[in-house]
Image (cartoon, rainbow, N blue to C red):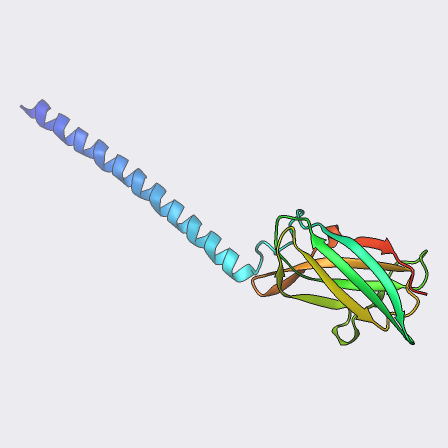
Amino acid sequence: MKTEQNKKNLNKKAVSEMLAYVILIVIAIAVSVGVYAWFRATSGVGETPKCPDEVPLVIQEASCTLDGTVSKLTLTVKNKGLFDIKGYDIRGTTDAAKKPVIPLGGTNNGRYTFGNTLAPNTPDTKTFTNVGNLAKIEIEPFREQEGEIILCDKAIITQEVSCV
């Protein structure tokens, strides 16, 4: 009888050791998840919003006219991408050999925002006045994510124009 009692005690001891190991592993996992969440919350490091690659904005038409002494650039762009576009930054230059750096659009510092957003496969036409003697323009689309403007620097397009 005594041996049978010893076997029962040994089995109970094995179960309690196994339970202790399981509890120890669960505690270790819980602590590691807590530390990760704390680091992520306090470091301020997370994924920074970026513009997706599928945001090609194309210039369908760019024409200049002279109305008296005021030169006007009429620009028609089309969203050929998969995502909505909030607007674009437009810059110009009077020398076709140089990079466009002069913002067009008056008080907006070269930033043109669509009414809502420009949906995929949708065109938009805008006329810019007092553009001077433009030789080349550059547009850089941007999106809005989480209330923040995200420039699409991989989708910049440049086109020569003749506003003389």
